[in-house]
Length: 574
Image 1 (tube, one colour):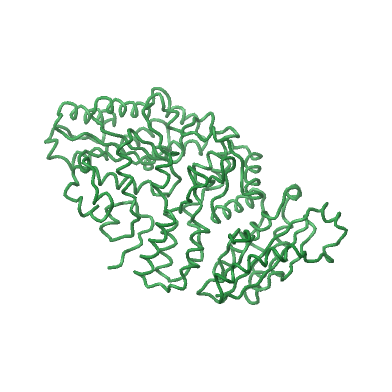
Image 2 (cartoon, helix red, strand yellow; image 1 turned 90 degrees about the vertical axis):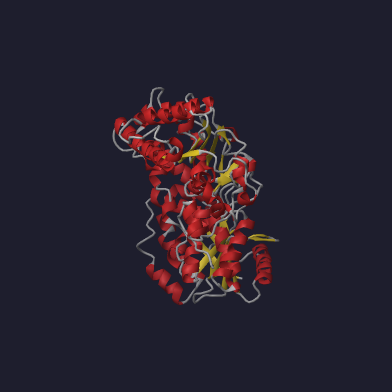
């Protein structure tokens, strides 16, 4: 029976019940069991909630009879630890806490959220509690939690409590990004309900009524501001042994594709092209070791595969809009300073890298540090928008993020990419001519750029902004490579006709060369009389040689594009 692709489903039981594809990460349950009070941070939609649900199913004493059904085919099912299904599990998710209103209203929402989870816990374990406790959702959460812990303290024969907190920082982060700093300070103050909650968890760990606390989130912000109340946290985010706990490795990706191609009878000849799209757009995340294996975003992979299996074609849109961080976040994370935001976005659009201080890549920092300039790259690293290039620079992890940052760039600089391009793109689809397409980009896009940008532009800038514009209009027919690796080096930009569309088999390899206005003047040549350089011909020929070996049936064309400051360009077919 073929499995289902359940995009966006974070309920482990539902995935098992509906026979969904599941990349087995249960080995990490065994590893996590050795860590006291672990805190693990990863970007949004990277599989944290599914991990929490999986832990809940594994440790919940009320699901003991379900163990074989839920875990029988997994690593942990065949190598169970003695602690499986041994605890009461209180599984909290702070993303459902409403951050709007006064601090009292936020507390009411928090109390309701936690009380409902405690009520459910008591309800499914009545055979253990035997009426000793009854949760009233109208009572204060801390009263109910303390009551629950007291019952466990007085009854040593009862299972201990395992606490899981998913998205611990969610509603706190919303306060920050909506400029509610005073509310945030109240939330994390010494006498706040949130700090008291974490103090209660700490006390539960000390008395033994709580066996462990597992916390996930995105930013290491709120946890530091609450550190005096919860100074027992063990941060495992930047530990090498947990780097691959979430996200797909290359091997896991290949095994998943093996299953999908077999189950859905997808034409094997399409596999290489599909793998390239997945790698270009969803791979590239390195959270700990820069030279280590990159990881795929698991949610985006499932987004892609669902559409591939439904339609048997590469999706037109490769970015899930749910994953796009709004520009307001960028502005807020750069201290609400327009100049900071502009400089930050410009740096990444122009160079696709930004320096960072590894000393600042700590596992916790507070609100005061958060808006210091040195922390900007760190914040975006935790959000999953930047990844490690090496020990000194962070970079955009993949084409998805490069596109998103060009969108930010266009928005900040008020560049229109929506109203003047239809005729150019239509002409290209009818008769694909690179020179005409690039001329349209130069006339309508480059002409809008602010003068100051031309003091910084380079090959990467022209390549990336041209790619982003093309991807807006031509994604039905093409995919793209940026810096595809060959034995002779990396190509700048490649157009690839989708296997199921009219340009199937077409591959264009494009090399970009940039000369400033000053360099053009020194060359004693005009743009009109500029000649194709022999060294550039040799360079691109090396890439094409490698490409022909991989795709002997492809119709390969090669081009060199010379950009001259803001003066003009030349396109040469080689």
